[in-house]
Image 1 (cartoon, rainbow, N blue to C red):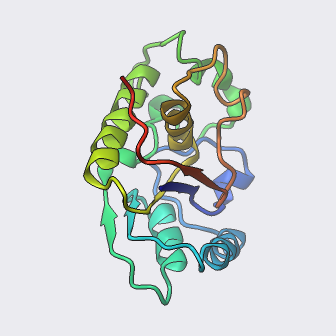
Image 2 (cartoon, helix red, strand yellow):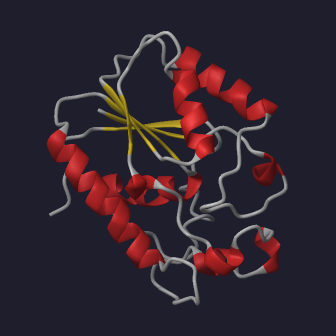
Length: 184
């Protein structure tokens, strides 16, 4: 089984600022959310945690892992999408929904192209679903990462804005996927 959770809330989440590679910490509510997720997963067998190396994800993983001693691996492949020139802007200040349209596949000066982003996350998922088949793996990552993960396991990339399609996990929301699914 693959479990995926998004990091807890940060101040930039509250301000509706886009946050890719910025290393923003959890705020007080984010830490409380991580504690709630820890408690909700306490009866769930988890063999391994794979975590984004960004501070907000690491803090979330460490809180979830309190008292459990589950091995944590940090993996750069699940770092948030690089927002480049849009980093720190409010969603309303640029075409945020167009930015999350897979089929538009816009190219940017610095920001990571959506299809390149999907390829990075799909490669990670191909690797771990093969390497950890039969294991229960918790991935602690980001809202943007939750989009291609959902598409990977559903084998479907919806038209239009993937954010409007409801594919983004909320802070510390947990999704569960079977890890024996593979794209063909």
